[in-house]
Length: 401
Image (cartoon, rainbow, N blue to C red; front, side, top):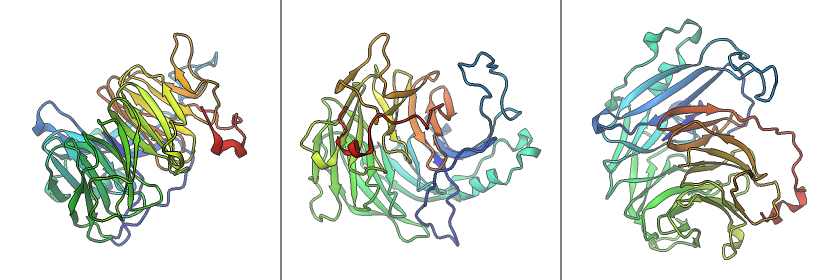
């Protein structure tokens, strides 16, 4: 599992909501992130704080006759610098709070752990790449120097998400169908408290959670019971029933993503390789988009932060696809054929084995990080942003694919 860090640092130890503004990549690029490992031996797992430095772009398009893959716009090789924090047990999911140094992770030993990794992050930032030597490439920060809170729950889980609206609000979901709520005592985020209740609206393992991009008391979750459900936390003493229930798929729903640009849209990805987009204004209607193109389970899904119709999808078929749903298609359900790639796919990424997650950078335009059994990839897809959309703005809310 992986996530980005975005320099959203505490001011006088106070954490505030990030005001993310999209910007173009400046080469050579410096990108920061966090990741959690799943080592063979539980005692060898780590929380990694990562700096990917001296990242350059290729000089030519792949289709150019003059393309030389060895040439780059900026000279030198990429540099990866890490600081690691020992963690007992494999890391099922890791998430940074609004891109800040407050990081939560789920372990296979049933713990939700919350860290302040500012010490490790600052060590990486202070390294002068122009004077870099390999002795500074790795380092270890003891867990007791950065662990804020530690909660053992009824079972392990995979669903974990920070609120994008309320500082210090965290949700976790377990394989026995429970959703637990955690809140920071204050904006210093020096201590976290678990709510004395839990939500149990699912009939199977809670696989993923997404907070509403606009409301701090609303979240969505998906499960192996095939449903996507929405909870309004302002409804007290009713923790077993959701406000909205969508029978989304006929199999496990692995992942969901709530569209921050169009909050009425939620995308879901399932075990059968299908991806659907739901309009929350019409929850009794079928999905407005039903894509079954990937040949294996969907492992990760995320809407692009600064574009309402672009969705990144990773699958166990070892492919990452990027879809533009503003492009119309005559068929409601898109099926893969031997020679056809749907027009909605604007980029395909191959070459990794057992892809687990795909994450859009919150502020750098079109930058993605994927993590897999074979390692990390950081890519900026060659997407023509100036290409005219095939849908008029007046028809956006009537889109049917």
